[in-house]
Length: 254
Image 1 (cartoon, rainbow, N blue to C red):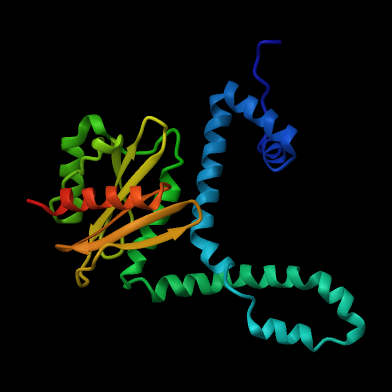
Image 2 (cartoon, helix red, strand yellow):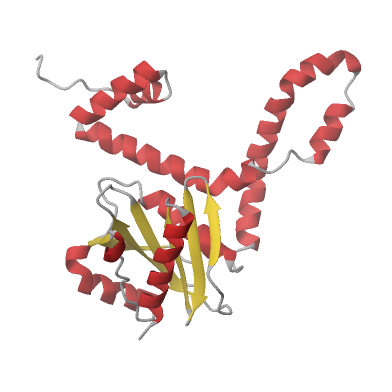
């Protein structure tokens, strides 16, 4: 029995994951020895990254003035208690804003150009951390990938070549878009760093190269020739811009 792997419940894994350094080290050993544990942790990391991308901008907003006014109106005798509860109240308010206001912001801004960047950043956060299934169609079947995505987007696309900068295509997948489905091409370098190129149909006016960022990822995006595109990664800004320009030329030049 000594050679049998120890089976841990989700509760055990979560306790180690959110525990102290010793607990996290124990969890890392289990992940190294058990593929199922590693896959489960990767899925949790993916979910955490997607949530951070979605709600980080809201969490960074200032506390609403109406809450500050309510706190200032409290009796002086309660001031010490209120000072200790201020951060709790602010956190609760921001969670509420995230779920109520965040949805409203998403719906109201669905047709704005910068919503393209938000969608691309969210797709990157969702799939770039994926271990078992980062893509639906591998690069070994690139011809099928291009034909499939072109058909679903209703417009022919080409796969940018980023090999000069050390990033090879590992494949792609179909993801939700705004006006139509979107294609997500994924690249990886020898260090395991990943980039994604998000491509979808866009009816808006053409734009210059624009920059957007969120925690753990940056994007350069543009609209040209009826396509909205964004290159996303966690690289130095100058490097990412150079790669975005290469992707732009590969996608738009005949």
